[in-house]
Image (cartoon, rainbow, N blue to C red; front, top):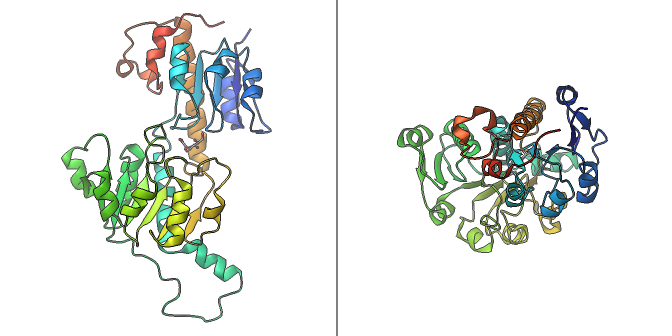
Length: 346
Ligand code: 8YV
């Protein structure tokens, strides 16, 4: 009998077919957003689970799914999954880095341009029939992008892809990151490694790309917004919760900063009503990686990760696992869970 896996949300046919060769797949083609109780009930006898950002996995969830060996997330961020709880139970967790870098960086730049040039505000004005004077010297004046200073908080793979785009706009890049880039790369990107306070004070655009964790919760709040220039624009394509949305709405309405472009929100899909009331903010519903080809690559990679990790779990590889030497498990984010694996597939 084929082992069972559960897919929490809708996926492409190609991905389903790939998995159905080896697994008894419980899909969710209706794409209901399942509660933890309902997803864990569906996964009670499953060895593998494919999740997205909306699926929360914690210790109680894992306890209800005792056969689970691998959770493969469609997405690079895994803050929806309690990694420590998974590691403690020997459950491997995989993610889908790299394949989404370009699409997500493009969306970051789209929000940057849209906020700087007030695109959605101007379009709403036109659609509302308010465009009466064919031209006015002072109509919808925005902010220059070319030659401006872009601050990137979180200079990982997507941050670097954003910086490469900024080169084409003759921008100067300031960045905050745990580690400094090699100097040749800094030169190529016209980028300087600075403290967060320096970045906030000097940047015309501040773009957030840090993963969400307790450490990055409300990384940008009232105090940080207060350090920014009144002409500056904040872009969040990282995670809701990295920004204190209430503080941001207050800063936008008081003119502490000029504008914001947001793809992610605290408590998605709910959006803070004060943000919805601001004209100087461009809002998109968590579509950073949402191109057809990117989402297909992410879902297929999640399926391949699941299969590779389940194969290793079945072999019961236990200790001294070095992920850099084991290409097949390069997308396992808690390889130390292998030390806890005790059960066999089937
Ligand atoms: C995903 C994302 O599409 O990869 C991530 O971390 O934020 C998005 O690009 C989303 O998380 C789906 O799970």
